[in-house]
Amino acid sequence: MERQSAEKRVQELHETLNQYNYEYHVLDKPSVPDSEYDQRLRELIELEDQFPDLKSPDSPTQRVGGAILDFFEKVEHRTPMLSLGNAFNEQDLRDFDRRVRQAVGDDFSYVCELKIDGLAVSLRYEGGRFVQGATRGDGSIGEDITSNLKTIRSIPLKVKETAAFEVRGEAFMPKRSFEALNAAKEERGEEPFANPRNAAAGSLRQLDPKIAASRNLDIFLYALAEIGDMGIESHSEGLDRLDELGFKTNPERKRCATIEEVLEYVEEWTQGRPDLSYDIDGIVIKVDALDQQSELGTTAKSPRWAIAFKFPAEEVVTILKDIELSV
Ligand code: NAD
Image 1: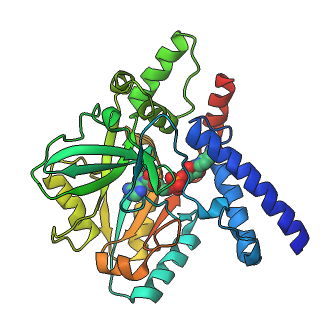
Image 2 (image 1 turned 135 degrees about the vertical axis):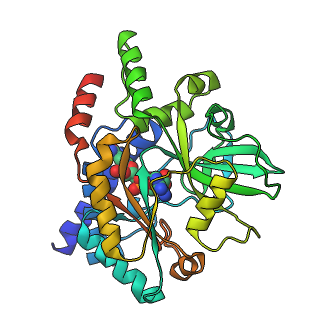
């Protein structure tokens, strides 16, 4: 593509992606399936690679998704809440593996986890008590949704660790709660939610915690942030520690020594996904050792030590059907 047409296309993609982001993150009401969003984002990334001067700091490729609603108190994240780079096929995963190897050598392992399709949240504990819960927002600033998060029964309000720390995870709506909620909404003549992810996000951003409480949300915690001197050296040790402290982590995680094992895990869950009682939209692959994570570092938007494999778009049909229902 010539530079002039590339510039025009980049502009168009900025506008479209900003609109999609707004519908998804602010309105909790996407107008297109995720696969379409991902495809356009990918096109923009490729154009920016080809014409680096067209990459601006406000490009949708440089920003962590969300926006912050005014009616909640703002919370500044002490450690940024980043997004994840995406992989769509085996080659993307092999390229990721090659980049990791180039940076840290051959002696490392991965942890593979299910990518829960919900809303990223951060929980802060001080003196053994849950003191604040926030959305990811734009990655630096989120919304204080403590009261709504307290309605999730699996979040411990007290823990046996008095040092201040934060845990991060994904709040989600189990498939059964989602179906019951939409059935009740339709009975009342209200617009149904497009998918469990939007329903979870919409529920946690209600001003009245009673509404969140009625929505039967749940959570899986997947990271300890600000571990201080807890003596943790790897991501998997961090997850085990979360278990000991009484947090709910996802039991399907697996340590993998090679990319071949990672690919097997991806294949297993591409098949096994419909049997889960909650939605997943991919697999997250993380380098396990924390010192190797530091060596790899992060970009402005995502860590270089992790990647999200996105499942092929089986949702296209269902989401379009839901959107038809909701207009
Ligand atoms: P992402 O969903 O690709 O990945 C990052 C997120 O994964 C993290 O923030 C975390 O919340 C989540 N996650 C789930 N399980 C995890 C685990 N085990 N470990 C670590 N993280 C885990 O990126 P994003 O920036 O959150 O959002 C982009 C997503 O939103 C894409 O799926 C995109 O398709 C969708 N989107 C859709 C539209 C639309 O219009 N349809 C618009 C904007 C964004």
